[in-house]
Amino acid sequence: MAKKVKFYAVWNGRQTGIFNTWEECKKQVEGFDGAQYKSFESKTEAENALKRNYFAVLNPSAKQSSNGKLIKTPKPKHEALVVDAAWNTKTGDMEYQGKYLQNKLFVFKKGPFQDGTNNIGEFLAIVHALAFLKQHNSDLPIYSDSKTAISWVKKKKANTKLEPTGRNNELFDLLERAEKWLRDNNFSNKILKWETEDWGENPADFGRK
Image 1 (tube, rainbow, N blue to C red):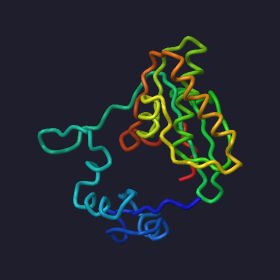
Image 2 (cartoon, helix red, strand yellow):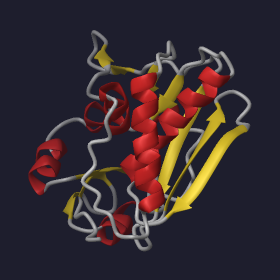
Image 3 (tube, helix red, strand yellow):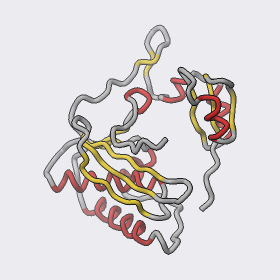
Image 4 (cartoon, rainbow, N blue to C red):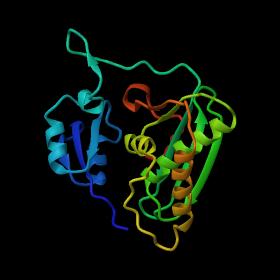
């Protein structure tokens, strides 16, 4: 599986600009106090972002006060389930997990699954959380930091381009079951975006960045 190329914009670091690899970006930001950087899918996107305010790029939906400063979204204080996935770029292994937001207790942890993707993990994590909450008659909201996975759940379809490899048959079976669950079940749980830049890392994060 070919590794997706990314470009890194650095607003504040030892050197600023666009860097073609994480290794180059890391040299500029690791250990640098107040480092500001973000990855993008294309060089053009990175270049355009670098021309804008760093915080506005991170949270484009944030409102601005009269003095132009961004108004941060308040961190949720209510109980919820938070989910996240991790994908190893070297091995292709993927895993996902869910925790309660307030007490950080694990609700589930699945994987690793061979030859997966991060988006698939994020999608399966949300559906797993929905099924768990429905089983326990709970209307708790679910937080995910993946816009892609949230959109897949809303469409009840994982729009993945992942190809079968013979080692990921279990994943495709899980995807089929997850999509069927979404088609066959109604739920009232809100699926919300975890605002990492305002609130810090998702509590369900694997801590491997």
